[in-house]
Image 1: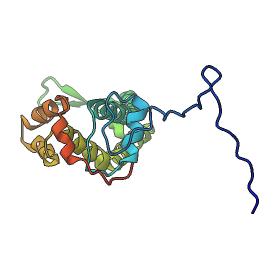
Image 2: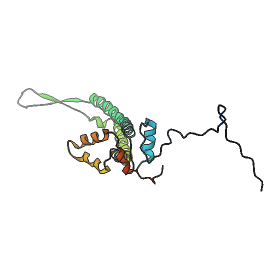
Image 3: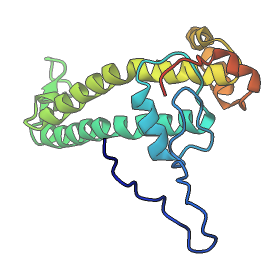
Image 4: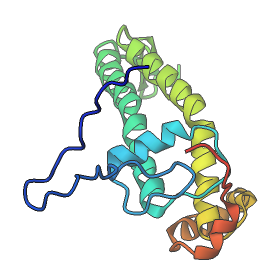
Length: 197
């Protein structure tokens, strides 16, 4: 049996010791929260953990995802606003004054009548925006619920605390406060050690 010679480890010219490869900073395990996450890291982890309800999510992960969701939802809203504004301008061109009043020779009043903005040719922008809002909402409902669940775990609260937002009036405010709370080390009880990284 013949053996082939192995290449020696690369040497560091300063101290003749072999160089050791350092892991990349973004190689954080997915089963652990990433504190101080950047916007791209948070969005990447958001989609990689699409339906993962176990584990934790740091404040930076959660709030960057909230920003991302807001920006993505803003685009179809702009389409709808363009459609409404153009539709109103179109409908205004076709308004007519219609007289009404008494038949005994009294003073006649008038009212304006015409097509609705939704009947304009530019209403396609409204329909497109509405369709995109529905699609985006359906696509992001599960991952948004999952990251909220994990964020509550990071504050050492069980995920079902999310449903406190259903309490009329104050529920959403309470949930907002919970999402703003700092991380607690006790929240590690929600981590699954065997979860894929």
